[in-house]
Length: 74
Image 1 (cartoon, rainbow, N blue to C red):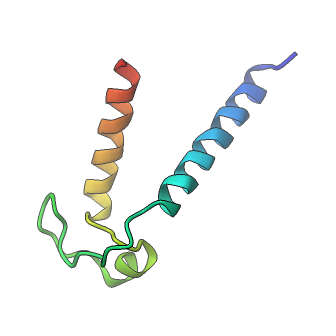
Image 2: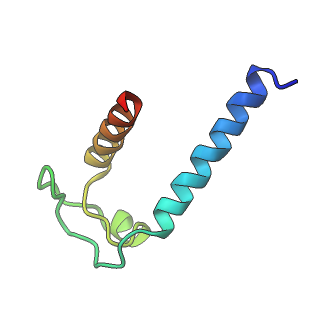
């Protein structure tokens, strides 16, 4: 019988797999130099690490939080 810790670990593994799949399917477009949402410069290290990046870390965090919020309402 699975306890709460087993369920939490399984959920975390599923989330990680989804995040990896999302990263792999990312756009092959060139990375932006400025964030699409706030126009802040995107650091070179982020542009290299995340191919096709469109937003700064802060704005990406906000986008992901909004997606989770909307997904939770469905």
